[in-house]
Length: 331
Image 1: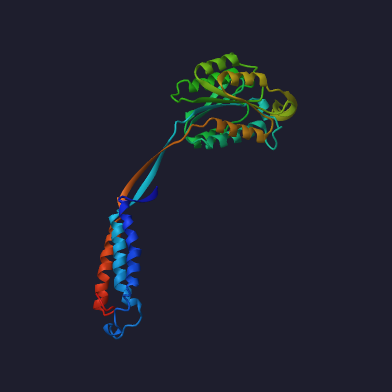
Image 2 (image 1 turned 120 degrees about the vertical axis):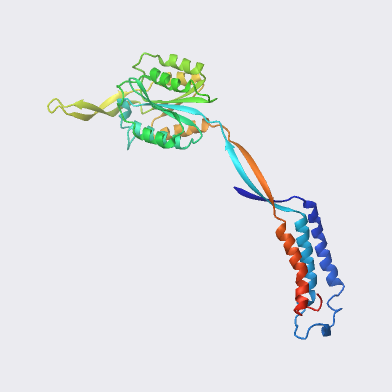
């Protein structure tokens, strides 16, 4: 809340121009020489006492003019309103997202960090999380609970669903979470590093459904092209224990498919081949999907002329007091 000063009757301030004229006339007529030293009390010294009554009345006049101008102090507060965007993020958690080409972390960990930053920067929006591999699972419906979303994203791990890359099912799952949304702007952010190889729903058909529902899809292809080291869980035939072995695999991103999905729904395709690029992709989507903030300002004014009125009254009484105490020769 801020304070805004103003005058309700500012025309009275023109009277302040009279004060300098009065001062000039007072000294021009030689008021000081008109008084003889014999009229002053014997104990008084200093010529300022001769002018004290005049300046008290002059300051009283200034204070009275300010009081008549009705100074007011406004207490203003603002109410910000914005129409939030509903966003469902679909993140690939298939085994290939563990590829270690995004050092010092794998692809999934870098994507999770970028998602957490993205969520934290959008307090006015509802966001949800869908994870997918060979099938899709809703980790969070649309919500404004940023703390819960942050904890859910941090808890995402590889292979929490059957392995594979079911892009069509992921789109259908995310769209189902948005289809009943009353928001004018609904968005899906699809993050994957592979080729559609699972699921009963064709990705282009799912994109057509999203288009029909008025949902925009941003697609993000992550990872470098070619062979990369991917941690693969295997069972030791001797001990029977499950171990993680790093296998060099050729992981391809179906850029053409992701471009078609984004183009059909009015979104945009992004390619991220390193951690910095992936963070930049989410920052770019954050800039693209913004609604203007509407601010309403309310101001309530309170009268503050009383201090000036009391000051004028006190200044008018000061010469009388000074005369009584024999500080000046006139009351």
